[in-house]
Image (cartoon, rainbow, N blue to C red; front, side, top):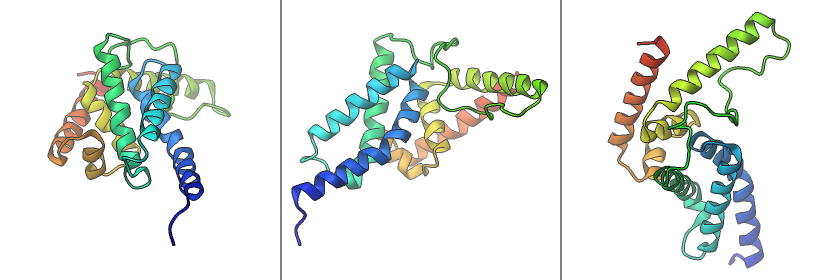
Amino acid sequence: MAETPEQRNNELERWVRNSLPKALVFARTLCSDEHTAEDLVHDCFCRLLAKRDKYDLLADGWRLLLRSITNAAIDRHRKNEPTLLESLTDDGGSAINAVPDGRGQEPLQIVMNRELEQTIETALKRLPFAQRAVLELKSLGMSQTEIADSLAITENNVGVLLYRAREKMSKLLRGS
């Protein structure tokens, strides 16, 4: 039985609703603030949906969306718009907290958690763009194959970027 346009639209709507939160988190790690990330994700969704006849968004949409977000963030970076990768001071806060929010904790633990979060965020900001993107996607639970497809690079390159990102993070967090 052939799929009706209404069924196809419902499936695409479900795909957008399921993809949106993760796409925003990913974009937030690449952009300087939450509003820029939201704009970037919105633009990428609109471009993909405008070409829904050309692409199979239900099968390949997530990969295409990640590639689109990455390319859009790189374009912003090249236009010298501030990004987390260049700026060591981010007034917007982080979309992904490295430590719990601190409710119900002792004051000393709250301070220690904030210091740890700031140290990790500062170290992430010092990673090269490609290393950070690969590390963020891996932290979202993606496989090396999925990351390679999403960023249009080889799996070997993903492995190298992950290795280098982890090594650099280790050195930065140790203070070396």
